[in-house]
Length: 285
Image 1 (cartoon, helix red, strand yellow):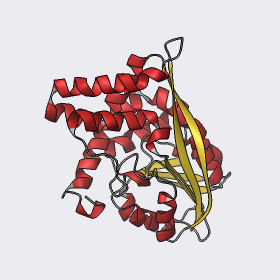
Image 2: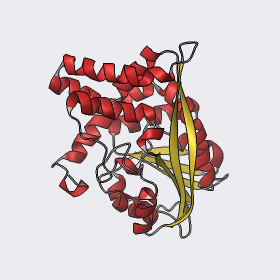
Image 3: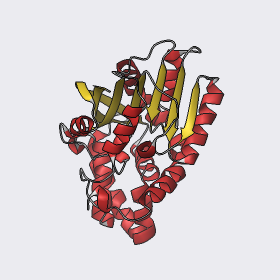
Image 4: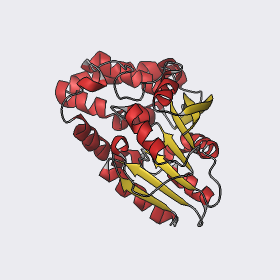
């Protein structure tokens, strides 16, 4: 199945799934964002953000790296974070208000259809965004249309499955237990662009000039194997759907697969440290 052959209403299903995921993502923020902050900072650095800049964050989710960018641009700048899941946008707005950051604005918008009349940005960032979109090239073109000429886009996506074990094991478990499709470059998903050069090809197709490609290794820390398993279950819409459709016994099969795969990462003190390699690119409009 290619992205063009996705079922009717796919985006509506995506929107509903990500809105439903907003609450568990917020609950696990303490774990995930500690591991991802190095990436937030690197993306903002590559975007060229500085005091007074205007920055666009595409697929901002609960608000990163928009909030990191907002701290850099200061009160004289502005950041717009967009996401198409209304519950994500609502929680991102709440986080900004709690942090007292007034120079960031969160907008509910489809990145493939982006239209912010009269708004142009000095740079853009996107963390794990385009890999989830049915037509990433269309979304990239829409981003480029909102950048001033020559402005940078800094974006990230996951490397190949072998170097992102917490995602690879989750995908394997869902395939074994529920018959879920394996990751494919033509289909939206977190493991979509693991092949070296895959995202750069999309950037070129959208009219960007790629100036830099690099990798960054992140580390996600859990207090125990059981805490990590809880994270894996709660953060995976595919897992939840699999249990709903195939029953509790299938869910237990998935859990056994995950437990066996994660066991080698358990340390002597019973904690887990899971690596995850991210690819980044700096491209110019």
